[in-house]
Amino acid sequence: MIGYVTELNNDTFEEFIKRKFTLININASWCDVSKGVRSSIVETSSMYYNIVSFGQIDSDKNLETVEKIKIRNVPTVLLFKDGVEIDRLGNSIDTESISEMINRNLEIG
Image 1: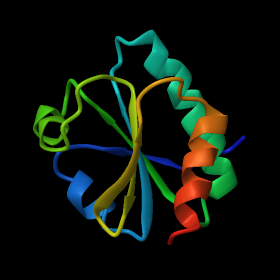
Image 2: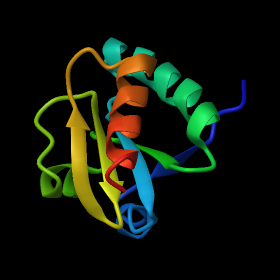
Image 3: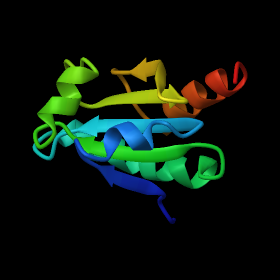
Image 4: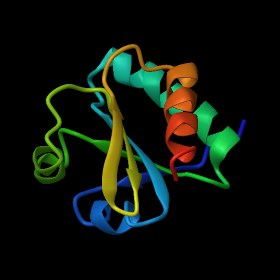
């Protein structure tokens, strides 16, 4: 499986989320749950790569961005449309819940 996930940081985050639809995985290298979510993000990106841009950002290395978008827990998955957050997942994040979030929001897009 090929994943389409861009590694982001404080300097690249704002420009990246300006795309039509972007999904961002906020994770931490020390968090075991984040590792499982990363796999789900890669899997989901292979299904939606032509509609949604996928990125991920390490919360520990990018505190400025994490504080700005009000992340309280990792992992958290955010969906943006044209730079504005439109949805967020924080519990039970898997391929199915990520796909459901995307599908739900593409209907209004």
